[in-house]
Length: 127
Length: 112
Image (cartoon, rainbow over all chains, first blue to last red; front, side):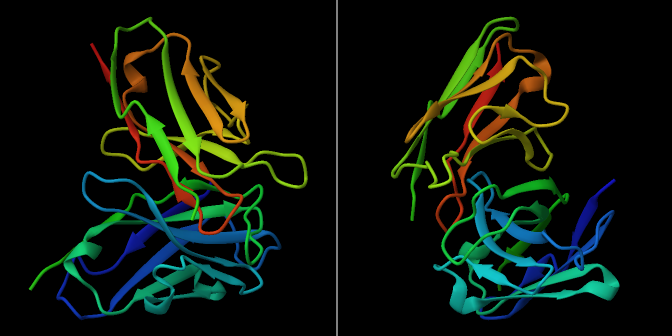
């Protein structure tokens, strides 16, 4: 059974850097074809994909946030870390990590879906 | 970016009645491999999204057969043949053919 759980601060101040950790079980990020993605959801709003990372350390970022995001993995710890710099109140959201099967090229993600998702962690940006 | 537009944004359905949600993409989701990469998720109240449908019309493992997906190119539909109380939540379509991956704005299903 695959499970994922997000952890990190619940409150960050504007301009600070957010660091979130996704700890997972039931799969290995050293297995070919496997990835982990991050998606966020502002309160009452829609889902927004942020970034993903693969077993081979390939990474993909949302272009609109690419300058602020970094995704890394620690295969030995079964963890994926997402950092987002220069946080702003509009970044207030529930942040989810999710297991990925399927491979995104630099331009396309045919056959890629997110399942399952973690429970999410609400991050509030406020001074 | 591909814009995914869902209609309606909300609907209220009597149990046992059908429901239909439309999703339109700003570009074709047909890949050169012949497949169309359109997905449907359901986010039940207080829960994380769960995959319902992949590649337009394939039900994910464990999804009841009252859920069906159809469409092609840029126009897609999710249908629930007979709505049950457990179907309440927000439904999202998602495309994966072009980065960035994008989602629709969601359709909230309520029970009358």
